[in-house]
Image 1 (cartoon, one colour):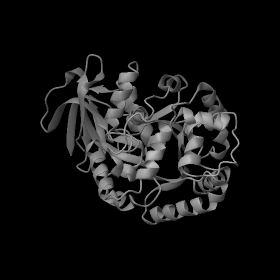
Image 2: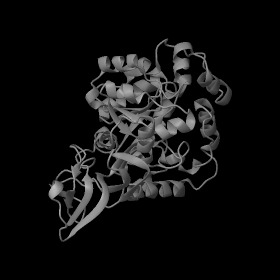
Image 3: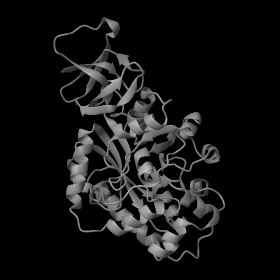
Image 4: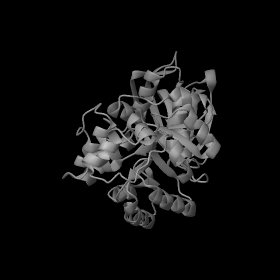
Length: 396
């Protein structure tokens, strides 16, 4: 049995407990939290740390398959140029397996206990089987032209079956509104309804995406024609936002993670509310990736006003310098200073666990769970804010 005390213990579902003590089995299973309050005194067998004790973080959006692209793409080149670089570099010679393994280990050391990882192949499968991290894999399909729907879906199905065979949780998901044809969307929708998996989609990630749906032109159209040499003659702009254009393909009964959301507006949220319940809908923020590519951030205050469920992701090492949920929290705090540390931690822990449907084991310090335990140091306790010196250390 371990007893771990800290300046504050953040249980995940309730307010931080000053001078709390986390009691757990040697294997990390939570037994109870003791609230000593101001009467805290040193006790035999209690480890005490200065900082905040939190459950393990949940990274709800990552691309391990791009780990070999670290430092290969320059910042602030814009979304379409970034897509072009990904297409140029993704298949370059590299020890991708080793890069994935290193990224996995670094995420574990950075206090990440569970990850929602986007995969196009089964490259990451063997690493995930051996990892200390719990993974949910979103097997992503592309296919802008309707003629590619059958082939793209069957390829994803093969990957899905390989993950199923390995007893790893997975589902087939659409890449984005603009890169999936209606025929392919229908196949993904049917599979999701039959298998009950979670859906994740890159949503409203750039101005170019909005322009493509409103007017059928702009950087994404040019990317398809000039870089990918695709026939776009079948495409008809919908005249409404990308999210509103594809809601019918996102079944209401399935868990939905909307990722990035830079261009999401109030009318999009209204349409979302009319179409589906917000109880199984999550907005995933990847601020460091957004700044890296577009140098722009999503309207976080709008999401909070609309009481959206928010969680955090790191995206990939192609668009981020490190896979760190703490660094994502620091960026949000710097740009949205009215957001409390308690709220940020709820996004990093319990909301992420709920989004990946793993909250029975992760996201909070509750009896019987094994969420892991992190110590965050470098905190200004007067303001309850992270300082630039904030660090995370895994204790369990």
